[in-house]
Each structure stands twice: as C-alpha cells, then as structure tokens.
Image (cartoon, rainbow, N blue to C red; front, side):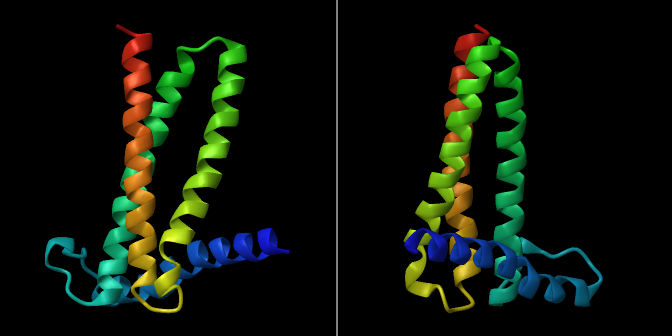
Length: 133
C-alpha cells in the first residue's frame, strides 16, 4: 500500500508541476527570463527547464556510453539506469515532502531532480572517458 501511495504521489508531482506552471509563461507570449524570475510560478517553470536540460544531457551521455558496451553490459547498464531513475525520483520525493502541498514544491522537486541527474551524468561521463581513452 505504501508503494502505491508513494508512486501515486511521485506521478502527481511530476504531472502537476508543469500543469500549473505552464500558464504563467504562456500568458506572456514571450520567452521567460529565468535570470530575473521572481514569482513562484515562473521560478517553477525555470526549475523544470533546468531539469529538462540536465535530463537531455544525461540521455546523450547515457546513449554514447551504452554504445561502447558489449550486449550483456548494455543490459546491465539498462537495469542499473532503471534502478537509478526509481531511486532518483523516490529520493527527491522524500527530500521535498516538507513542502509537498505548497507551490514551492515543484521548484524544490525539480531542483533535486536536476542535482541528482547532473551527478549521474558526471558519473557516466567518467565511465565513458575510461571506455574511450
């Protein structure tokens, strides 16, 4: 039961943040200036943008590293990556529980996802450099 509630909370968090954050950026019909964002909705949008950028970078490195591996190693990496994604999402849910019901939660959750995703990317970059000296 706890697993179901945790999974539902994570999915709601992932789905809800962009939904309530997007209208603020769309209302302006102009690019959002994240360096000067001050209201929480725009800060949330910017934080999710940073996470998306970090996630894209991770996916590029993951794909490049995966290409250097033998088929059995690829399968092992895929298993490890799936487990890491589960850990990352659960860890960030846990770390941001204090503000789960507040508008700031989306930004905190996205910031946590960004930080852990960046750490994972750096780890895979290190492995990629070792594989391709």
